[in-house]
Image 1 (cartoon, rainbow, N blue to C red):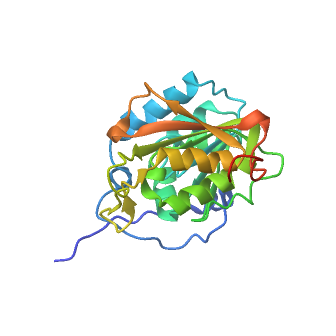
Image 2 (image 1 turned 90 degrees about the vertical axis):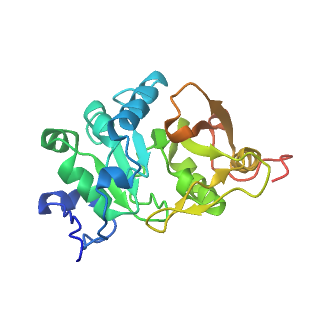
Length: 245
């Protein structure tokens, strides 16, 4: 007997809020959109929101939710931020559609005008030149990326951040005892790649930024958190002299 799998579709009114990608029939799945991103929906979303507030996020800041998925975090950030200041980036159209249809309050949609970009390459070319992100959150994103993809992500994000912008990312720490572990998730995607912190710090330095460890934020699913800051107010400017890059 076949399984009836849920199918979500964004309303026509929402098509104008998407940049890039076609509004096509998307992949179906057994779990709902909440379970697809790992469950603990309310706890993790609220945890990330409250952490960003403690780190200084204000309504006037521009905020990028990298790997926004079904808006587990977005449902908290969108009502808080000023109009048009929330941007979400994800590679799965169906997951965004599910979040918009099932999670985000209709009034918040209309009043806050969040913007979304759909692509798998971290392409932010559709973001207007006048928008520089003060805060970027990559919650449970690096935990699904290979090392080369993490580097590509950071290379794409840094130039679109404000001079004092910050990127917060969660990750699994590599113990250093063997090669970083990579396993396949239930849908064939990567899950659990462990981050070599020394490699990451060196890579970020070569991009003109610096890494700071973050503690006491709650550690959902035992994930650590780090913060990437532009060094000296500049970033994405290439190799630094004497850095060995």
